[in-house]
Image 1 (cartoon, rainbow, N blue to C red):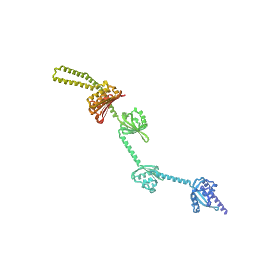
Image 2: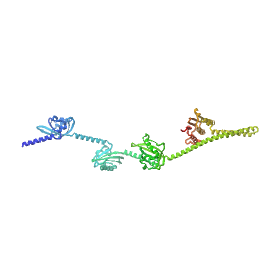
Image 3: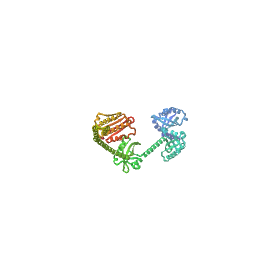
Length: 602
């Protein structure tokens, strides 16, 4: 019987030894008195990195972190019954790394030796994972607290499970008072229904929903993002009142711009750089007699006559690549083509703008066909009038020459003959005439002299003295000398450089310049009240400039009208017939200046 018990005891010892050595958790046995290691299993050797020989040469203190030795000594001073069976410690690996462990100790009696067995569970990875989770939770909390959105989470019963500081401000409540409460009772009435409906949709569709709503009690537009999950909902609220106001302002601007574009009589057409039409306003429909629907997406070339289409695309690309933002199209006018094939004249401006990094070309077109037609008719009439005036001036010059010649050769000779006859009669009747006859003879002599003077004056007026023989400078000098005799109270002068005095210009130009100067001098002497009058003549062989200036009262605003027998219009017409121009500069403070300028057309 005793032999059987010994066998059982022996078998039990073998079983316990195998359980110790093969246990997957590190285990060792140490002497309670000396703390020296007595036995160690393979798991402990693997975890701590020692050989069995090295490990049994250690004490319990050698395995503990130096910073924990004081706590360990205090722990060991306690009686076994008072020592906690389980305790967390920091142990050292053979290479010096720290290992966080949970250690369970059990008192043993080995052949009269007071010992203790320790079982160790490595918590290093678990604690590292827990720390990472804790750090992640902290970072997440910091992130959620730092965002400008009001953020909160709800469970499936719509109760608050998390609230950040922005959400506290939105709900005007502390998070401790919100957590666990149902969200509907905390939302303003004006947003409650919409919020609940959108939350239901997010859960039903298992997808994020985004929506805007107006909170009347706060006077704010809010945008919300709701994210569903198996645990409930994550909600982001943000104030988008400024964005909503900006969008509304942009919408109003777009509507105003559209109203302006649609109300203008001009054609407003926009295209991309490729030339395809995007906008075709009612003005364009009216001018081109095409509908917006028929032109949408069509090339702009369809609105041009066939002969201009080949080069249009290149012009469009060149403008899109040029630095300028706006310019006139063509040379002020371009040709357009209506749907019925009729060509029209257009004033066109093209502008380039960038919208969303895309180049947009905007063309503004005004139908000026009627104006062009009227201007063409007016130009034709002006040319006809100019030609008529030119013929009249030529006829005037020819007629004046003939009249002057007739006065000189016929009436002048007749008047000379009458004088000779009168003087002969007076000689023959010298001794026979009575006093009454003498008076009549004297009157007759005076009338004959007056008639001869008048004929000579008419000749001077009709044929400017010296003009044909000696040129413009001499004729003007003679004209002003004669004026000085009749107007001695006015300082009359002429300025002609010596090299200019001998120059000659075409006879019709000299005649026109002289007649303009004569009219300007006459007007000044009659109407200006001037105390001085000057004539300046300068130029070159192929240019002529003449200026008549006075210091009179000038011409009042709106007073540029006909004066005298020719007037301003007549001066301008005379100049125009020879390809010259007449300009008049006048002001109440500085008198009047009339300028005649001629230069042959290249």
